[in-house]
Length: 325
Image (tube, rainbow, N blue to C red; front, top):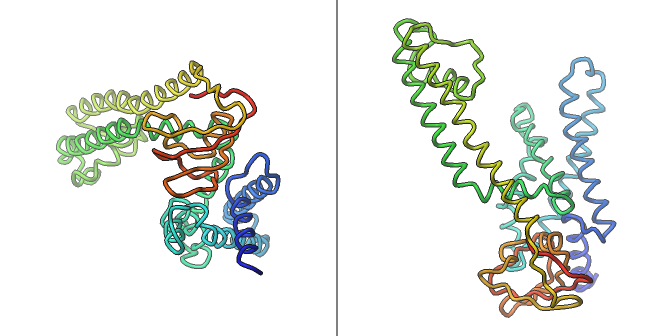
């Protein structure tokens, strides 16, 4: 096989194993095939824990081995075609970048428990993370990606609210220890012993397995319970506000590009709405197809996961006017 034919085959395999293009039937079938394999793998792991189904254990083992083998093949193919996913990296460095990426790490942790540390259920359950591929497949066909964009946009506020929760949790744990240690030395042995109680109280669960019996302890519990209601509401409100903002921007946007009715050229500057978006996100949100990306002296054939950066020049094609967000 010649070098050209090998590159053509590698590019075709890359197009197939990436998130499916609506116009590429084979790629979309592969996406749903992988989704089916993921579901079978997770279902097999869960069914294998039922004693009533112990007689089917050999069958479950076979199904698990077959599904993991497909994961291994997909993982190897993704490493082999990493050069197309990271066109700015050359040779081995593209593969190294994939191995250190989120998808690469998750794929590896999905496979390893089958060969090593099979008795550790916590590692085996990492396969559940593979269900993220369900969302990745749908990310370009529905609005699920809005969730991730909201979490990223509001990450600083969410981190701050989580920090407040941790501080209150530690403070309440220390406080309840001071109030209850002498009366309940077994339940509250040290400040760390109150962590479970403070978590269940702050998060308004209150299991009742550990509870204060002194007057001061009960007063503290009432105050902490009220604080817990407000603390839990903070991140919820932040995320809800983010969804409202995203929805409002989408509904109120009416900016149109009338200069790309057929084929056009768009320059990505600092203020461009395309900056930081992936090729797939541009195709979905603006109803255009990016044909070529000019990046410095490079001419890049786009893939759906490639992000647009400042100073990129994109050659786009569309059959009708498009809306920006």
